[in-house]
Image 1 (tube, rainbow, N blue to C red):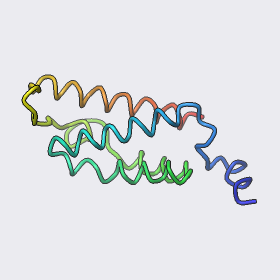
Image 2 (tube, rainbow, N blue to C red):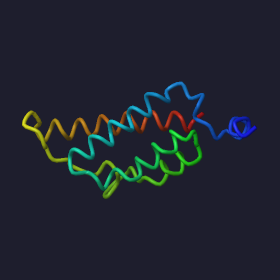
Image 3 (cartoon, one colour):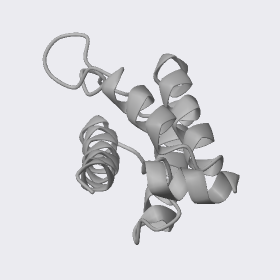
Length: 113
């Protein structure tokens, strides 16, 4: 009965066709932030990931909308340092941007359903 209620209320991510891609993108962004001194970026991502893993679309949406994406002090306003020998500052910045854009696009698509 509870599952039926989640489906009828729209509070489910189970039928989102790109759910596995969104979970993977979230995990990749968390890993990147942790490896590049961005622990301060991880908390809202973990809340978001937990909501997805518990099939709670409303909590995922709340976590997403609680993140600021435009301008100074936004989620994307960060220049991660190069931490490994094979990285340059430009490379690290572009990887961060690519991961963030992929995650944002997948999440935006899910919310539009």
